[in-house]
Length: 321
Image 1: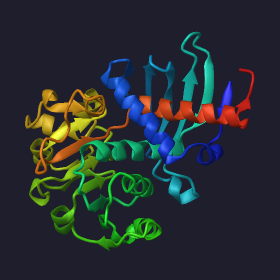
Image 2 (image 1 turned 90 degrees about the vertical axis):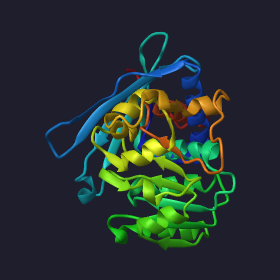
Image 3 (image 1 turned 30 degrees about the horizontal axis):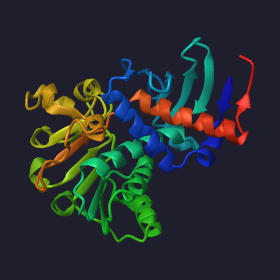
Image 4 (image 1 turned 135 degrees about the horizontal axis):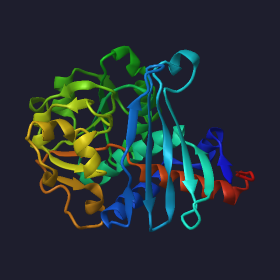
């Protein structure tokens, strides 16, 4: 069995590596050569933690396995990341455990890659202003990945606690992009692309605040009850997702579905755009929305790539198991 520890991931996987792996997953899902198993995600009644499993199988590259982990909100007080996870890969021919891979950085990178891919395929080509909602650990990864997809000229940002936006301000400075903290009205009125990455359980952005032609990458809602966008905003957009089954149950779409403002048939997998089966954006004034729920196949793809890199570079740890 191969072990790739968390402390090796940064030296093995670049954001570009992750973007390629995740884009291939979207295409495999659209071709129905890969599928995700039902998600298990539970509040364990201890340490205020959410814990669960995401698993799946991709027949195109024989990636089989699961990611185990969750959210421990008190970790920050002891110097650990709140999100903790590990990826387990299994041999598709025998069922033997093939590898265990540290999943914390990989999760951040693949989540950022997913929203970046949505920008690549759905945002207007002339998008110039990027709006960021949220300032947690993941937000910096989202910002760095997004700016690779369009020639953004400035960054607008909002967070419930504005003092936390210093993280994004530092990234914007590194990228040599103007950065401004604004209210939601201005952010919606001026942004061409908006990324939301929060843990909100109440709508933040309203339909009345978003202008025509905006692309929304909604990346924070991955649990029953979470919500970042007003249901009416989701219903007003052309909606794309990583997986429809998750979008309607634990994703941003769940609330519009519950209000009967949206149906499953209104939601398109992003993979259909990547493979050319769907045209994607149909006009400059169309509001497009990507409901990024996070699927197991993305975790398996980036973990498999990390294992391949570790083996090729001779840094993989091998043990009898």
